[in-house]
Image (cartoon, rainbow, N blue to C red; front, side, top):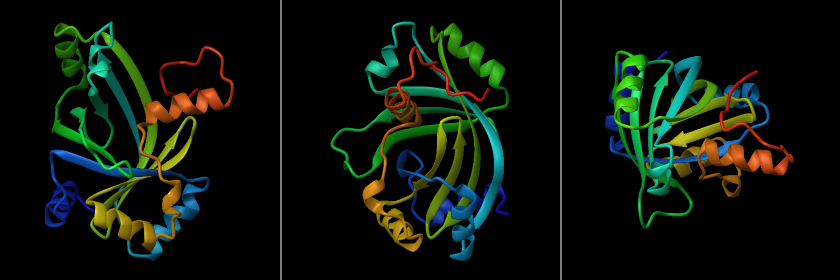
Length: 201
């Protein structure tokens, strides 16, 4: 299993920019079978089936969302605070965002700070995530309450190489956030008054 410092070195050595996120998602019915494929082609485990809880913050009027900005705190393999922002003139084949992230000691203290700044609207997402490093990309295998997905993050050429290596149909790629995919899931399944939170149970 790769240690955290090894993962950071892996990212730097493969020219993944720390301030820009480039990724694509795919819906995967059988994550266990897909994970076996990743291992067969040389994927290196970073961490295994970690429970992550993300809390996304906004103002009561959702001003951040209107500006295409996203602030969250997340617990799991480590505690982090992250700001993401939509970029202009991006490639429609990829999800591209400015991403500023730092490790934090306390989710509770970060929450208090954001609330004091006026970000009192909260959205919660829970998932189980396994990560692998493969061919210059990071593969995140995510089990969410509404389905199983894989995220492939890296440079565009590395992403395309990994898609081919894993035998994925590239035309099935998804570029929306999990919040967006959850909305589509609810609409497609006729869910009346759906929860704003993506949680188990």
